[in-house]
Amino acid sequence: MDINYKTSYDISFLGFGVENILHIIIHSDSAAMAEFVPEAYKQLNFTLIDPTLPPTQYPNLATIYFAVGYLEGAVAGLMTETNNVAIIADYPKSVQRRYVNGFKQGVLAVCPICNIHHLYLKAFPSKNNDFITGD
Image 1 (tube, rainbow, N blue to C red):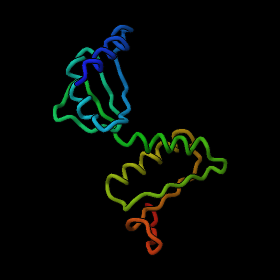
Image 2 (image 1 turned 135 degrees about the vertical axis):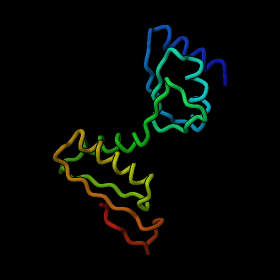
Image 3 (image 1 turned 60 degrees about the horizontal axis):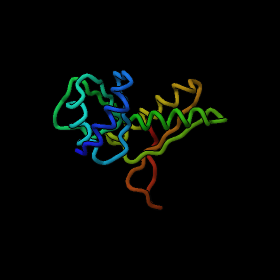
Image 4 (image 1 turned 30 degrees about the vertical axis):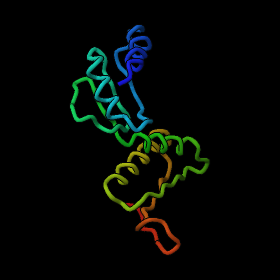
């Protein structure tokens, strides 16, 4: 891992007395970062949003998945003018269901009176594919 990565944590966080760090993963080498940082900074607590998990478990590392669905739902709930929001997801396998559930929870967190409509695709989109209704 690049030594500048460690230096930036030393300067940015440790120098200011930070104890907890929330890190939203936006790059493909998240497993490498998640392996290096908790080991190097045992005095800090890290929460990673939608990461690729490192092979080792660390007591100062927590992960949250499908937060992006929650955030998108919250934005949809804030932006609706009709109190109706909708989401279309791929075929209803567990990953998609968790994403849709995160979306629904995000909507309801900011707009408890919103109506949430969703559809799952039967297969990859094409003009010949129908939808199946959400549950």
